Amino acid sequence: MNKTKYILALTALLALVGCKSTLTSWLRANPVPLTDFVPHHEKLRRMDDSCPFHYYWADLDALMAADLKHVYIAPVDTGYLQKGNAWDEFAKSITTADKDLQDLADFAQLAYYKAFKSQEQAIGVTVVDSPDVPNTLVVESAIVAFAPTKSTVYAAGMVGDFFVPCLGLVTDAISSGTIAVETRARIGKDGPIVAVLATTENDPNALISLSKLTWTTPAKINIKRIAIQTASSCTVDKMEDLDRGYPIEFFSTFSDADLDNL
Image (tube, rainbow, N blue to C red; front, side, top):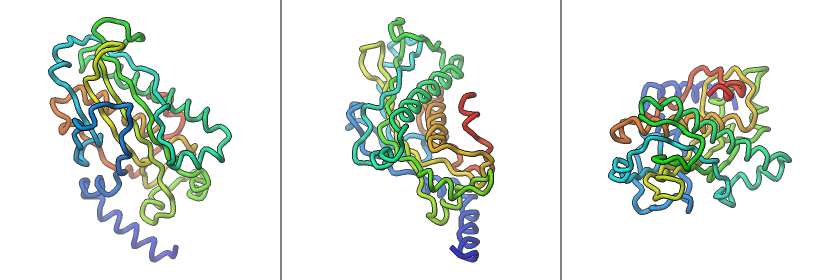
């Protein structure tokens, strides 16, 4: 694109930066169809764009009556990954696709574990390593859609060690990846499901990132954020109080190394 068009596009973006609600709505991914991993589709409430989650439902009476003292984070499921999405085509050209997807699921379990661990005092529960402990809330999650940003496009966006994803944001030069996660919480290992959360997120945006990103890094960043928001949802009186956060970072130094220090 020519220089004038780029400057106009960047100016338009910066003009919007002052309006969080406009940016949040504009940049937010459309939710993918819900899967059978989560029940009670008819009960799920569609949240507005200020909330981190697209869908939410909870049986608050059952949660209060359960006298929960522990939380267990189950392995993250990839068996509900929806067919016919961008992942199918992408995986054909990536020899490590299955391994990388499992790595993403393992990372997600660890992210949820550490997110709830950091909120133990605020929630009033202890994170445990077995679902068989009495008075335990079992948190089960599934990656139900994954469309990675193409690695060739990432390479095109690199200038030395500088990556400028917002160039694609304002010009459509870079196709954004998405990830969708569904979470259900049940009382005990085989008990009733008492809460459901579901969200679809586009790759995070930063004006400048000083790190070399692998093709799974954006998904991991999103998973980390979803895990933190899920744990934080247990500390608010109502979901509307849970802040989605600002949709753009001006300057990011986030890298794969940081993912090990959740």
